[in-house]
Length: 343
Ligand SMILES: [Zn+2]
Ligand SMILES: [Zn+2]
Image 1 (tube, helix red, strand yellow):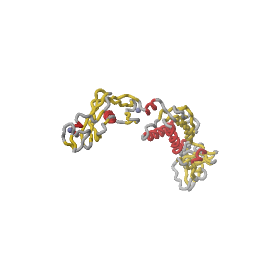
Image 2: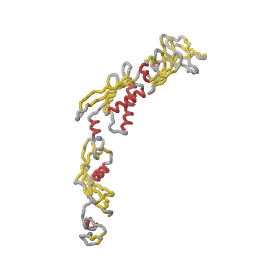
Image 3: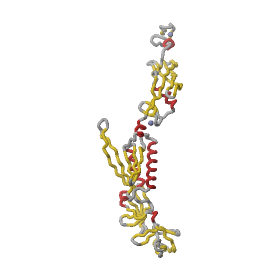
Image 4: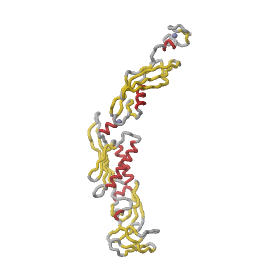
């Protein structure tokens, strides 16, 4: 059995020769610095904690910043905290931190306070975005004369924006720096090389676009590494599903385009076949679906129909595929002065 050197009471355990009450008497267990600076990004409103920027309510951030700076003496352990704050002005908050402390199994409380000062700043991501930072350029073009149509341009930009929005949901450093309409197409400036690479791949898979990447040395980092920007050329094919195309000297209707290639229907014998992705660039556009001519059907007999030639209104017999059911008019195309059905 020990006794306390201060009050003389018997005590089972002692600290520095004192009973727990005498030892705690007037002793500060926790401490906070006089003030704590809390950086906020004026652009996105996130707060800096360590080397991370996080989204928080202002008052939560203020109280968390205080707690993060709490220190405790060696013999005590903080087992819980409660905070309260008082706003002195929008940039200055007084925060009190009430701590529950364990000192050799004895639970007690302590309180410390600090001034949290809000400091305006710009986070790294925003400073890059505001500074027009980019690592890659996606150049969207087409093989067709006259460049991208307004419709193609809008669709591919919407496709790009959706893709980037999905990627940015889990990685905030991914963003579109700017989009620029240029002769023949559109340029999209992107914050990351991998974003450019993945987008080019996506265009290739969804639209069967041809892609080409070219790096450009733009300087060196502070530690002497070469720094590159990547340009990804995405050439959208001229053709679309429904167009009449030429493939291996055959005139065909393009029935499907996908990431794996396409399917074509031969207009001479109505046989359908697949085209491998690697062969898709060999497909040449002959007539766009919108430019196909409607012909009025005047007679149907088995695998043949009789139509009025859309140019001279003479009657023409056309072969039809097995099981073909036609409307009052059908789509046709003229190849070498001969009229063909486009089923
Ligand atoms: Zn004592
Ligand atoms: Zn920011």
